[in-house]
Structures are given as C-alpha cells and as structure tokens.
Length: 122
Image 1 (spheres, rainbow, N blue to C red):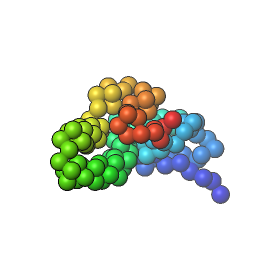
Image 2 (image 1 turned 180 degrees about the vertical axis):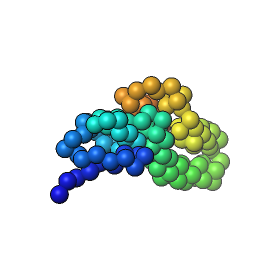
Image 3 (image 1 turned 45 degrees about the horizontal axis):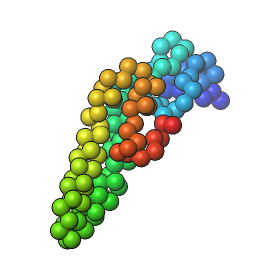
Image 4 (image 1 turned 30 degrees about the horizontal axis):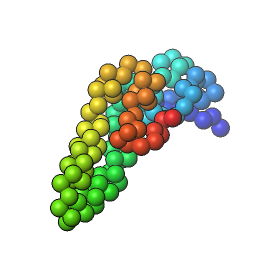
C-alpha cells in the first residue's frame, strides 16, 4: 500500500517519491511542484493567524475577568492595563512582522511572545 501526500490544491504524490519540508507546522499550506513539496507562504500566513486567534481566545477571556475585577475595585490603572492587553491581543493577527515575513523562518519568528506567550513554532 502506497502512502500519498496531498497538497493544499488536492494534487498528490507518493510519499516515498516526494521531498517533504522538515516540519509539519504549515502542513495545510504545502504545495506540490514536481516531486518537491514546498510551503506556500501566503497560505502559511493564514494558518499562522488562525493559530494566533486560537491561542488568544482564552487569553482574552482571562483578561475580561481581570478587567471586571478592576472595574469592581474602581482601579483605573488596572483597567487601563487590561484594556491595553486586550487591544494587543486583538491586534496580534495584524502584526506587521507577519505581513512582511518573506520566509517561513521569519513567519515563525513573528510570534509575539510578550503578548501570546510561548511560541508553538519554537
């Protein structure tokens, strides 16, 4: 039985015949050209942004709790800090480092650990 690899466009090749990227982080962005599979950078950016959205969801929920506690305590400094943190989380998928990345390595390096925590691409 032959194992096939199917790229993002539905083209397939026998896995034993293909040159495959060393990691699978952007598997959904693989593109087949001859016997070589490459990572489509545009599709990889979409996957990267989706991962940011996945990671930030619980972070936003936790920050909502922090904001509500600051609101109850009438702590203006804590409210301001919370609003800034939530804005940074909302803005994370639009970071210029993502749009300007011209390689997969630069895209992976665009993960903002100060906002999102540890990178899943490290």
